[in-house]
Structures are given as C-alpha cells and as structure tokens.
Length: 406
Ligand SMILES: Cc1cc2nc3c(=O)[nH]c(=O)nc-3n(C[C@H](O)[C@H](O)[C@H](O)COP(=O)(O)OP(=O)(O)OC[C@H]3O[C@@H](n4cnc5c(N)ncnc54)[C@H](O)[C@@H]3O)c2cc1C
Image 1 (spheres, rainbow, N blue to C red):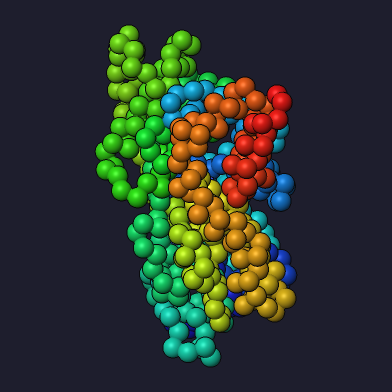
Image 2 (image 1 turned 90 degrees about the vertical axis):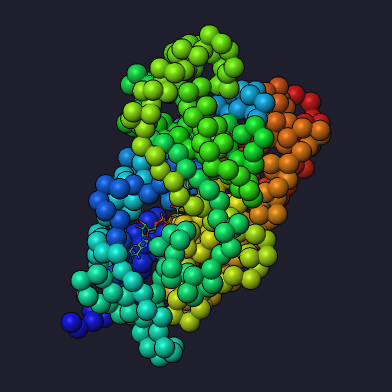
C-alpha cells in the first residue's frame, strides 16, 4: 500500500492535538490528525477549564459546558469556604469538549483519521516519519507531533521514559446528579492526611467525582475509601442540610448506606495518570528535536500541584504551531520554556510546600481558615482558581494580605 504523504502528522486528538491541527491547517499546512479512542469513550478528566484559558481562547465558550461561578472549598480539617468567583471557570464533558475541538480542526482542513497508529522512529534526519494503522495503511511526513497523552509511546522513544514517581494518580467516578439537582455545588476538598484533593464537578447530566494525589507512596484502597467517604458526604448534604462532608455522626449511617448502595450500582469508574514532572526533569527533558515535537500531556505539561493540563495542552499547541508556521519549529523548545515552563518548574518545587505546613498546620488548612474571615485572602484564592495567580509568590501574597486590615 502506498504511503500517504503530508506535511505534519499529529498523533492524538485531545485538546493539544486538535488545536495544533486546526492552527496548522488554517494556514494551508497539510495535516493528518489521528485518534484511536472509541467513539463516546471520554478521556478520564475533571474537565475544569480555568478562566485564564477561557480568556485566551474565548471560542471555547461555544463548546457545551457549565459555567461555575461559585465554589465550595474544604480544608483537610473539614472547614468550609463558600467562594463567589470573580472570574468563573467552565466544566466540560470531555466527550463534548474534545469533539468540539476536533470538529474545528476538520473545518480548518485537517485530515482526520479515527485510527490508533503506531510509530516507527526514522533511521536518520533525511527520512520522513511514518505512522501505521492496524489495517496496514501508512502516512508519512517530515514533521511529527506527539499529542498522544500522558502515556505517549512516541515521547518515550524521542524524549525518554519518565520515572513512575513523576506520574500522578487520578481516578474517580461518574455518577448521576442528585435528584436532578441543577444547583448541585462544585466542591474541592483538600484531603486529610494526603497530598492532594478530591473534587465534585457537576456537569450537564452527571457529576464527575475524582481524587488526584501527588503522594509518593500510598495504598490505593485507602484513597478509594476516602473518595467514597467524600461522595457519600456530598450526597448526604443534598439530603440533609445539617450534615457535614466528612461525617462520623451515628445518625448518618442509615442514609449513608442507602446512598452508597445506589452509587455502587450506577457509578462508572475511571482512572488515568497525570504527569507531575520533578524540577530536574523540567531542566533536562526536551519537547522538541529535528522534525519532532511533543505537546500537552505527552510533553509532561501539567501543573504539578493541581494536575491541571488543559490550559498547557492548548498553549503548547499554539506555541508549537506558531513556531512551525514561521519556519522555526525548533524554537518551540525555548518558547514553551519562556512562556510557561519556568512557572511549572517552580510549581514542581512548590508541590511539597503547598501540601506541607504553614504557621503550625497544613498550608491548605491555614489558607482556607484565613480566607473564611479575610477578603484579601479570598481574592488571592479566587485568582489562584482563575489561573491568574502563580505558586511562586503565593505564600508571600497570602501572608501580606493576611497582615492587611480586613
Ligand atoms: C482524572 C483526571 C482529571 C483531570 N482533571 C483535569 C481538569 O479538571 N482540568 C484540567 O485542566 N486538566 C485535568 N486533567 C489533565 C487533563 O486531562 C490533561 O492534561 C489533558 O487531557 C491533556 O490533553 P492532551 O491533548 O495532551 O492529551 P489527551 O487529552 O490525553 O489526548 C490524547 C489523545 O491521544 C489519543 N491517542 C493516544 N495514543 C494514540 C495512538 N497511538 N494513536 C492515535 N491516538 C492516540 C488518545 O485517544 C487521546 O484522545 C485531569 C486528568 C485526569 C487523569
């Protein structure tokens, strides 16, 4: 079978791949975009997209999602903070979000193939890259872009394998909205005794519950128990306004077992990895070389503290495409580093401190405790959630605002 020749092969049509394909195809580049995900199978993801991302690419608001203007935050000790967000963020079903971005790539002229492809490293720089579908069909191009996610085999071959400790664990359940409750709250709860957080992200027709941890060593069962505890608490509070999220009240036992029995019947489990690169890896791992580039999760571009990756998937796609279109594809390496690489590296250094202690208690406990009474701290927290506040000066800013009058 003859190879089909193109200018660029983009492997993976998640946010990174589709956005890169759209940008390149818009300028007349012949792009092939591949994805082997079975139709209707969503990528495991909370689907939260920060207001920073929505401001950068306002067209994202056209995708069907839910705007979140209020958020409930819980400290590890169970203190609750109701936050009205000055800048709302969006929560998307990843099926809807990914289909929307893929359709834009198609309309821009990218050739889209619903194929899982394998990749053969080329023998030398004069050869083209070739990818192959299961039936034997082949495509080749002088430039390959790996956008095939956190487990990218292409990235392993071209940039080296990441150590297991640099892959964070995230898993969760999709469950029905409680009593068709359109006002089901969006919740983020920092975990008692763990480096990480649990979330409840209501979408249009279901809730995405999940837990993400950057803990180095843990047993999975305890974390799963904690998530079930969180889920029971969430539904319990919808039924009984006096209930608490992390409850140990005897009188909740009956309701809890009913809730759990129902959820166990309907909940769909999902799990996946999120890259969480160590500071040294940010310095040494490359995302580009002659004729190749890694974008999004394949490059390891996710926030090491929160696991947020959609913004970086889109931004890296944008930076790569711009460099390629200028005929300077190799400049992508320096450009992503200058744009967001240094900040993510600093976040990686901050990770332990974010989940560590501050003024004698977990930092996240203090942050929520102070924010409950202090407008300045609430503002900083809102900025953090919006994606406008980095981690580098977070403690300093919180401390400064805490010292200012209310
Ligand atoms: C549980 C969980 C919750 C998360 N929640 C959030 C959140 O709320 N907000 C946020 O910003 N980030 C979140 N993230 C991170 C976010 O999901 C990723 O950072 C983001 O999806 C990265 O986009 P991407 O396009 O690089 O890769 P992906 O979205 O992973 O897309 C890669 C695509 O490549 C395809 N593919 C893989 N191999 C091949 C192949 N050989 N051939 C063809 N196609 C292939 C896959 O089918 C997939 O569609 C979460 C992650 C997890 C695991």
